[in-house]
Image (tube, rainbow, N blue to C red; front, side, top):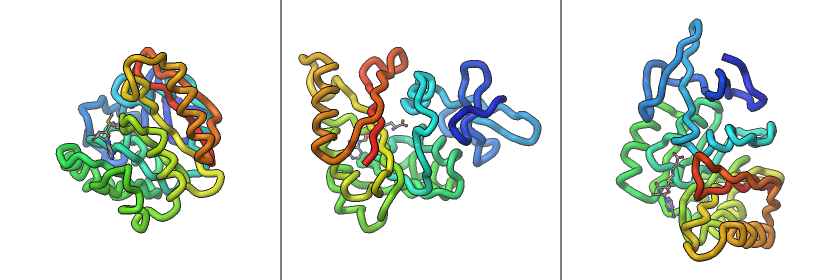
Length: 218
Ligand SMILES: C[S@@+](CC[C@H](N)C(=O)[O-])C[C@H]1O[C@@H](n2cnc3c(N)ncnc32)[C@H](O)[C@@H]1O
């Protein structure tokens, strides 16, 4: 097991791992590997877009200095659980609007005290702004038509100056008829008008052919 350029992320062959904060417990059926006294959890790029971004070659300073995170679209906590492994001392606010997804997310957070789930709509950041305060990183994976606008509103409300953002842009959910490249171009322009600079654009194929990761800063 080798450390990677991303702090807290390890590699064995082509596989990525994080150190399991809750030894012996799986979150989504992932493989656990013990090396000496340390237990690692496999981070599957076919299950988590953030792991696919790593596999596609994310910059080494992808996250910057992170202590507080706003994660939009937590679902059942697959990716969130790996962020929980990465930043044991951090606070990761996880917004999820579906009550069905929120129940398993809560179960994950019960064992991982750095996760702070919020049952809320990411389109209404004013509803959770007071709880979240200022964050170092906004991560978004919500698959909505107005993804860029949602990201901008949340970044405006919570992201500290020079803070980072990762927007998993679902190019098919905006419209089926237009080329993905045009959709990405428009999202980048909208983010720019909203005060977010796009530093990198990483298509996530073959892991997800419908997503492009936009890495931004304020
Ligand atoms: C693709 S899944 C997220 C997967 C998750 N990020 C992961 O990697 O483990 C998208 C999630 O976003 C949630 N979602 C969609 N629109 C939302 C909104 N406006 N506010 C909050 N959550 C939303 C959905 O309920 C769904 O659980």
